[in-house]
Amino acid sequence: MRFGKIFDSVNMPFIEENDQTRARREHLERIAALIGNPYPNKFERSRVVRPDEEDSISAIVERFAPLVPRAPGGARPAPEEIERANAELNRYEVRVAGRIATPPRVMGKAAFVHLSDGVARLQIYVRKGETKAITSDGREIDGWELFELLDHGDFIGVAGFLFVTKTGELSIHVKQLYFLAKALLPMPDKMHGIADPEVRQRQRYLDLIASSLKIERDAELSTREVFERRAQIIREIRRFLDERGFIEVETPMLSPLATGAAARPFKTWHNALGIPLYARIAPELYLKRLIVGGFERVYELNRNFRNEGLSVRHNPEFTMLEFYCAYWDARQMMDFCEELLRAVVGRVCGSMRVRYGTHEIDFAPKFPHLSMKEAIVRYWTTEMNDPVGEPFSASWLEDDEKLSLLVRFCRALERLKAETDQGRAETIAAAWREAKRETLPLEDETARAHALEEVFATVAEERLIQPTFITDFPKAISPLAKRSIADPTVAERFELFIAGMEVANGFSELNDPMEQYERFLEQAAARERGDEEAMVMDEDFLRALSYGMPPTAGIGIGIDRLTMLLTDRHSIRDVILFPHLRPKKKPGEERTDEANGT
Image (tube, rainbow, N blue to C red; front, side, top):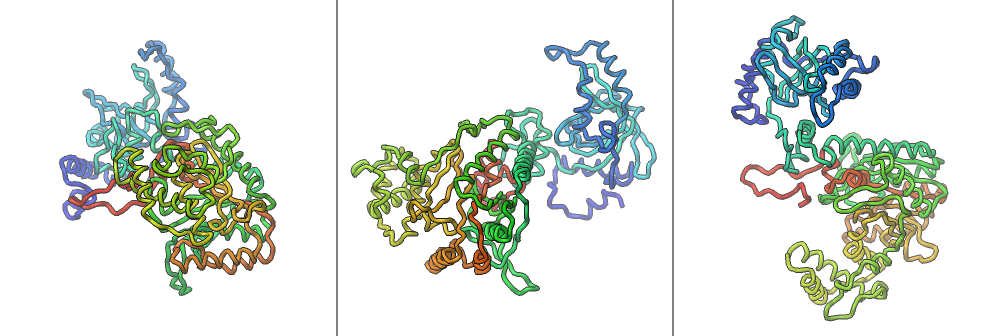
């Protein structure tokens, strides 16, 4: 069937109707009439660079670019140098394929165009009367007629010999031309790429195309390079852990209980079993069951799902590294975490210093340790004091009434910062006035723990730029961690902060089944009081602990946030290939700046 008839009879709402798309459809119809099937099943590339691997454009460029003569200052190479290079290059017949990266440049009876494989570009040279097009049934026809129907973005295959142009550019002199796929939609701006972050995130395929076609290269990583670095980060993590005796495992992504973390889960239904199942919020309790079973070192690179809000640091589906080691405690795990991160940063970035926005993050020095309370005291500034009241001091954190006032102040301050544009001093004064009008009784240990956590988040988190371990979290908000021997009100738990972001969370694992049972009961009581994120009772896990689990330390490291740090990206959506977004607004509806987390 001719493609024109298909276009006439089928409504394609995913393709805009305009002059460009109509021209491309017409070209496709004429190509189909010329060669037959315009969407062939395969194209076999040559194996010149390596006999066991097909030649990509990147491989050809990497292998033969050193043979191209270079002249100082961007001048053209001397004719004799080009002649010597071509004497060598002309011996190589290659077959490559790629996307047309630039609109064809026709000069009389000859034309130049660049092909891209998404990484590198290679120029091809087509001359009228010398190039043959290959039809779907293998016949040779006039290649120039096919070439004139090509559009920017089409996929083609070419066969020919290598040579260097007079300007010193590695090229292929095309003898055979194959049509592989039509781009029915026009390509993005080749000069500047896609400026709209929502378009980049919603249509990642277009973002990748745009970054590969972009002529003006920025100093920052391209979209493709970001995700190649992400893959390298994961590869280096696996290498590091494998070399140290850790075993990679897989645990359920659907389970009958939403356990392992304090979070709201996604819920589904298993028809055959007739039971509800929950998408994994964390693999922790399954991994600790493996420690019980005799695995001393285990890790999992896993996808977690949490039915919570969206922001520049939160996506409902995210990637986490979790690993556990028997006979370690939290302090040993912190040391090991440092070693792991330095190894990954050094291999991936080539330096211990990484630029993140306006900050230079240095992974080389020993990471400092601060308790949660010490961090609040250190980063509280005199400008945050009540201008008409008693100044803050460390003793406030031990006084329920003062702690309640502090958390009320912090809540008011965060709200006012988001809602008003008045100066900082005026905002702080207004927050204190509002805090004094409110009441917030801290009725129990859990309420006090959450209050301290809120104050820490407002006062200290964004100030923790260099890698810093925060320790001594309240036991009441650490239901799976051992209590501290020195202070039973806190847990042997830590979080690693870098550039104001929590990157890792770990602790000495609670292995006393009776105490763990009591902690679960406390969580159950919290759920009854309305805390939807409190943990549920997991009796099978308690039974596993009852068989005995050795002293163990565990940690979770956010792969997405680590990738943000090592690629200088400031939204989690920029390091996830296909992030979750709100449904696209229809024409006329008000648009939110979702790409920036609102």
